[in-house]
Length: 382
Image (cartoon, rainbow, N blue to C red; front, side):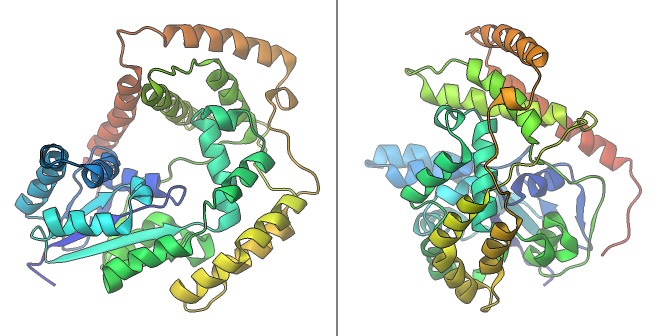
């Protein structure tokens, strides 16, 4: 409707194309025909997830007032915007309880727009497990670096991670019809693309155009993942500064992916896959959740259930190795060990904020793409 403001919260999940969506809007690749969009982030707004959690944990009026400041500042920006749509995208909302975000929205954002929508994606269980293993290896999570895919999966199962129904039911109970959940299954996506699907559904089917290349965060092949694993294994873990260590490893993983994305693909590309017995175990663990999710959110169509069966059918007969020596030559491994040791030593320099340095590189790429986008001719709306 004209002259109405709509605020859209894109809540992830992780590993559902969130980075592609965020880069498409940060680079100004998306145009909604006849409507303006305000995207108040250089890349993503993941800090808002942590800010919400801090606000929810505040025990004193003083602490609550302090934690409210960045949230209130963002709400004021949105309130002052004249755009028809505002998009807040943060996969970090995956760890924010639905009731807490409801409280934050009611407290800070209720007067910023006429309509507020909550939009999310869910990735099928087997694919989420393999992609999470790859992502945590890329991010250099120390425990994951010492695990294979079987160990990682068993730990996730023990912790009851990726049992989706309770969490998404909570979102539905808190937001009702304002909450939309889409399956991260390519055959179910509008035009087979998550960015197109998001724009089509989150913006109410309005005509839109997407220009340029919106693909991002493509999973590393096992060969490149093992190269990165060598580097991550050399980085020191600082017990006195665990958050700083985690942030550096995360940014190293992102920088590695950014650089590999600028290179031609390697001659050998092996995809991380489940093996048969592990896929069957995953199906046994998550089948009830998949069926319940299909009933509750997808009209009874067995989307997540079928993906579990398909994972078993496509699985390998034997487990894959996640040891660098099984993918890289002795000569390359020696070179990687030497260079990784040098890089790790450089990163120990305390006067440089390395996470900020690597983050700035990503921001610079987005700004350059945005400038280039301004020079491009307009495309016809879909």
